[in-house]
Image (cartoon, rainbow, N blue to C red; front, side):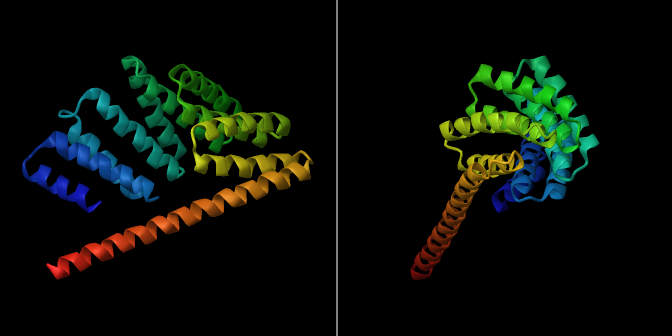
Length: 239
């Protein structure tokens, strides 16, 4: 973050609006990853305003889309949907299938979160089709997962389980352990809701194992980063 802020200050000082807008956008993305959507929203909005006459039109669509993600994280679904619909219209105009597929997914998730399940399914199936056209396994996995979540919410547990099954295959093909964790958790809940407690326990154990592995990986990464920082500081003192 400090390097992005430093780049932002330099760009502002040089009155370079294009690079200023891009730095604001990257800061917003980082705050999204840090689970600080309010701060992310501030940077996306400022980036859009700064870059409206300096950044390529197609690039600005991502600013609009990610503004929608920030609103979604804040549970301001109407505002999120407004930004996603704008982004979808613009992506479609440019024929940007990557943008189209991910925005369809986001709209489907919004409708899922707000309880409009049939509308959610419509957008998620459109997103799934576009992901299949581009060969995006990660996107296919997420679309299948959320289709399953819709059916779970609608208490169609067997249909939910069938989509979790397909989502899990895609997650493993994409080597996406985080999505595998989420799917196994919901898989377990789906089987429990349908009365199959043996399968529910099987997937709960798998969920717990993957979750623990991910926690350990994160801890090991943090320890390695601290060790690297310590060694760097030690070398600096020796100089």
